[in-house]
Each structure stands twice: as C-alpha cells, then as structure tokens.
Length: 111
Length: 111
Image 1: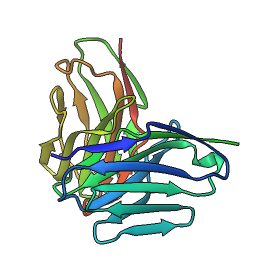
Image 2 (image 1 turned 180 degrees about the vertical axis):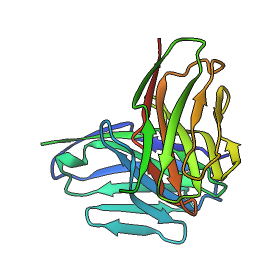
Image 3 (image 1 turned 90 degrees about the vertical axis):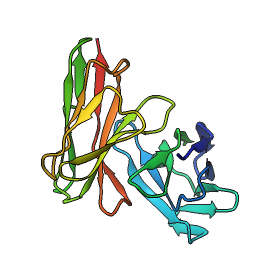
C-alpha cells in the first residue's frame, strides 16, 4: 500500500505570514499529489495539485513543491488571510482509484 | 447546478440497525467513492466504483455494503456488523481518477 504522513497537525500563523505544511509518502510509484482544503462544516475542495513530472507549481498565493527522491511534498501559502483558516489534507495517488490521504492540518490564521 | 448530493446530513442510529446513506451525482462521472472521516485521521476509503454494477473494497470495508445500479447513484449501507460506525461520511466522484469532487457529508451517530 501507501503511507502518507502529514505535519504539523495544527498550525497557527499571524495574518500576512506564510504557512508550510509537509507530507511524506512511502510508495515511489505514486505520481499525483493533490491538496484539499476543508472549511468548517463544508466539503473538501481541491486547491492545487502536482504530478510527478513537475517539481513545483504555483497558483497565486499557494504553491506546492515535490521532491521525488526524498518522497515528500509541501504546501506553501504566502500572505495568509483569515479565510485561509481550514483543515488541509494532502494525498498521494498511484493508480487503481486509490487516493491515500494524510491526517490533515488545522490551520488558523490570526487577524 | 452540477454536483454531488448526500443525504441525510445528520443521521442517528440505534445499535443493531442498518442505515443507508444516499449519494447522487449529476457530473456524469464514472468513478464514485465513499470515505470515512474521523477526528485526527485522514480520509479512509470504504468502497469505490469505477463503473455501473462494479465496486471494489477499500481499506475499511468491513461492516459496510454498497451498490451501483445507476451511474448517478452510489448508496452506502452501514450494517450492524460495523462496530464503531459513529463518523463523518464523505461521498466523492471523479473523472479519469484525478480530481475528487466531494459531497457535503453525512454525520452518523450511534445512540
């Protein structure tokens, strides 16, 4: 199977600061790494993803980096805002309709 | 308005009872999934289905059953054999096994 570890489990930052969430995976066959954001009481939604043939991807204030050799990938949020407060999940996918999720990071942005 | 609809949003069950959670999608997605979400844990796969009349067990299928008689519908039955059914259940669908589109979830509580 695949084992995805996510750290930290909770993260508090001041508004305007950056936030970084890290995930590691165990199976080198994994080739797709999405990040989902789940606001309180709402459904998880995809915010950014990266495929194994790319090392970094950016979308405005969020970016994801992937290190295939070390088997880890990270979510970076810059200039954080209160609406960034949510639980963030990373996942790894290697095919067969099986997504393996991390345990989630609860991010709080303090105004 | 396209999307995934789960019902009911909240459900209470007495011990020994079976309950069925509904999941309907109008996105024309082939693949559908059921995940269980517990505090401090990632999303864990219960069952998934790639096509009508076919479904596969995920990591925690014991005590659950599903059917896929129509492309749009993927109901989950939590049976009395599930020893710890209190949880938040998320249904999702995808096309080509990439981005997952989630429903808003069903919270099941055993009394």
